Image 1 (cartoon, helix red, strand yellow):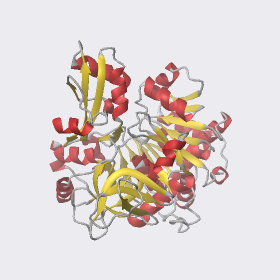
Image 2 (tube, one colour; image 1 turned 180 degrees about the vertical axis):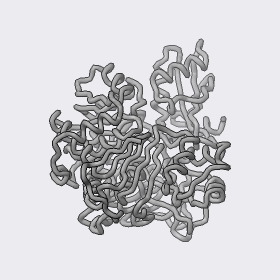
Image 3 (cartoon, helix red, strand yellow; image 1 turned 90 degrees about the vertical axis):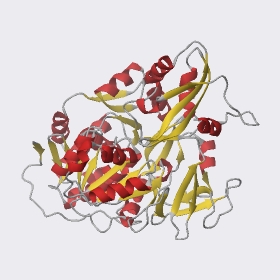
Image 4 (cartoon, helix red, strand yellow; image 1 turned 60 degrees about the vertical axis):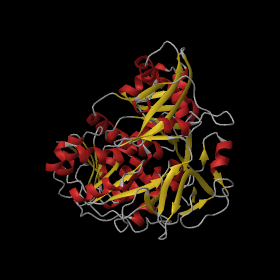
Length: 521
């Protein structure tokens, strides 16, 4: 194995992150501050593991500082910088280096097609893009005027280059906590992704809130197979590992045999994953012989888990799955459940510290409903977004009088536990990814033979939901339209089925009746 360590470093004992870093405390200012706290206390504790490369915290910090200085030399300070990179050590280093350079961090899906990526880069007004080789080729094909830094060498070479740059103190690169730190793209039913603006303090406060509710322990080892551009992966893997000066073991992607091997060989203690991972592992033939000698905590997010899956997982592994609720606009976590709650469908637990959650009526959004009454979920707390990038009207709709209106429908039980009942929006969540029906519809209607299209999410035992499109068209078959979608959409957005219909059902006011389409399937 390749180990990267600073020369002649002493070997300290594992120590917790300084007590000053607490919910609302002066230490919780940015995730770069978390890195500094970790390297100050545990410089030779293993920080990052990817394939045969292992970095301790001192080396991790040197790489972050080195890449930050490269970015500053390119004029990144004050600019918007995109990161498009599959899971590897470069993803973790670049996520922190962009923020340390004084730039606004814009994580994006490296699997985006040229059309999707072009829209996102233009909307975010990025001037620099850090890319793996596949994404770099897509970015360059756009002929968009921005500087591309391509990770075109083996990881070990980038680590050596960044670590060899004449260092400066990380303390000199700590960002202003109130400044805009990140624009993370999400969306709804409008067909276009929206850039969620989060301050440095909002992001790190949400880490602290979750830590206060379900604390990590010194020496925790996290397994990350979720894509690191995803808000849940960043919050529950990248940043939570920094909090406890723990170890982040990165897999290139999810494969059940890789996950089970890592759980054993790397003695993983914390497993954050999307619902599809837990469902997939329980159905994998190697699960019955799998060893998980150190696993103590599992976290699920992005889409809900059936109570039966939680029961079966706990029976097989001895570990409860903590299921949470939130959205990118909330930094991203609002609630979490605990093994002290009985597993029930839709249960997502209690609000995190310093977080208020209410159920309000669907008409005015101002009348607070009581126990057992169903309505829209609204929340407020220090982790909320600043607003949507360059979308004042949509910001005003989502943020009202200090409350974030989530667009989700829920209720509280007698013990104050939050349940998710449905979604007010038409957004589809498949395998933990958000799919916006109108975007799929618009791509389908780009085909010359398609007259109308309407996409809905249908229940799926593995993905949570699957993407199904209904099309009014002549002279074209399903295979042709699926191929057309694959050319213009990331794989998870491509419909698994296309239904040809003579006409789309409509409501009394002429809108497409998506509820009717869901019932028809």
